[in-house]
Image 1 (cartoon, rainbow, N blue to C red):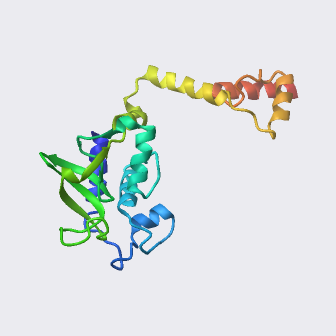
Image 2 (spheres, rainbow, N blue to C red; image 1 turned 135 degrees about the horizontal axis):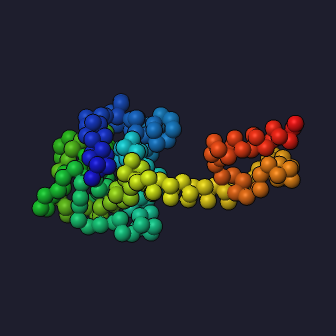
Image 3 (cartoon, one colour; image 1 turned 60 degrees about the vertical axis):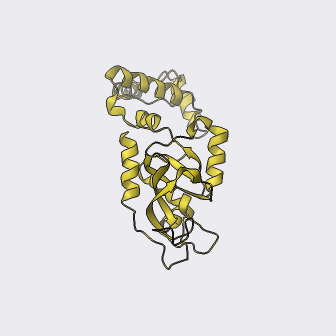
Length: 226
């Protein structure tokens, strides 16, 4: 839930941001997405806004796209359990008119979302209005909701909750993975020489070295130089 609040806080702070000049699609979310300033009809930015918000909140979406339908298709194929029909806070809503936003609240028959590239009222374009706005819409306009795995993301990132035993288990796992990595061609000849001299046994060559291990290696090397 902490991650959801963070995502909504990032989105809420953007309310009122508009493209400049009007009808140009020149906006910071597109600049971030494309890596340069862009403008023109080929660059609608409602999904770029959603991608930017999740990235700013430290939860990069697993598929980078500026297309609402493409993101939905990716989740339907790769993480179908994340495509749901009932909304929760922080969900990515996909509308049936080619538009998207982030769910802020839900009521019976309506949802309120923070949306990029829309209009502040029904008077303007709803999918190309040029502004970040809070909009309440009928659920009849919704194709689906995408629910990223917020809990998993928080579990991975919040290592402060791990016990000492869990930290040691994680460290051992990291050592196992690193140890299986191949030695570079540059280091291989000297590693073979060090192994021949008894400085190292050569196992798990890319595993991390503790201070005690480094001290013993240095001691062994100094004794051989005497």
